[in-house]
Image (cartoon, rainbow, N blue to C red; front, side, top):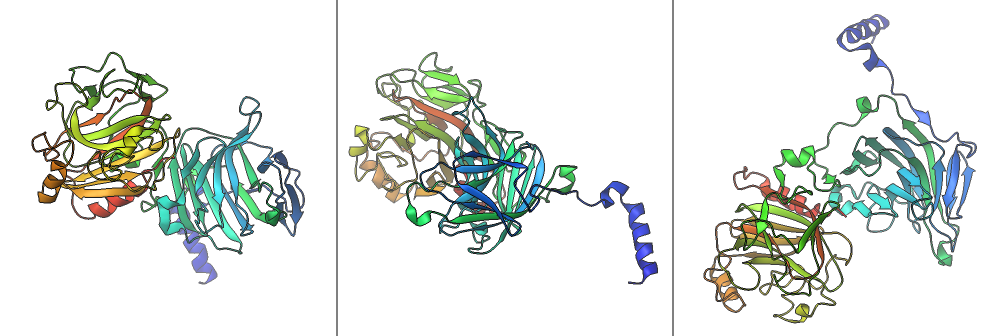
Length: 476
């Protein structure tokens, strides 16, 4: 291009675009390449040094996680850096993090960009350090798990804007979450604890070319990448993407709207409570529907994806039922419907009943057993997903499919005939029904109860999207 053409092109561009859009993105280095004067160490006693223009962290035995923290807090920003990690270490970069006297005696906590050279390949995921645990394990975006390169310098990009955090590794989009736990905080470089493992002593993780943009951040964010699954970690809410995809809240986190007792025309007056955005079954001796009783949705559902976060106490029993007809059982016990079993398999005696474990966690209760090995933990939040497409039904737990079956055919009817449901006419074959949360007299917590009704949604590409959403449903 000639000089005259270049001048003309710039002149034309300046008339088409606002002057401000021609200005270059402003970056501020967080590391001067010479010393650690703008950083302070918290937590453990790992060693940080400056070597060849990089910050290098050395692992140390018998000390806690170590963090080299910026002295300044940051709210909205774009952060870029390069990192190199030894295969034997796990590491990360803290975002909007804190060290408070009022929280576990100044323990560092907050969002963490994961650096993970292990075979599970979760680099680029988002972990909530010393608080909630995994918000975005990379099983949610398996396509990006090959972005990290072992034993090489890798590039990272993190965009923290408002309630949204997004990450990239080597230019490949990794994690995308919506969360409101922290609006600002420091940035920190982690050297993970290694316990007393002498083989990991002195291993290194290094960072270089660390820079941050804090001015006009919204202008420089990366365009939407809809193929990357998004996690909404704000309890009892819907993100813009969830709304666009047809998700609805079945419970608003505050009231009893949309629910009633299975055998009542109103919500139970006792046996259930609402506290801190959780719907809680109160402990009452372990009886089936003998305290507050089951609750059901006020409307029926036919084809849907149901997602429910649940947390159980030791020895607890409960369940999520669908295709429920509250009029079938007017007597004692629970309302009748297909049940996603919720149970402490180790401590509750019901796990030893039934046939081949078909009363254990995640099973289609008394009909089809879930696998013995399941991604589940007592006392923390787990996510149950039920998918119904006509006769076909699937049970998922924390992003893993447990079982699938077809109802309303010869095989199904034979299965029912050998179960406790054999005396209920046409069990499980209704075209639609209510959704139920069970009171079994044990303390169980529920939240983030959401449903996607796709009865009238276009068929094209729907099965692939449904599977993707089920795999990424785990919010832990």
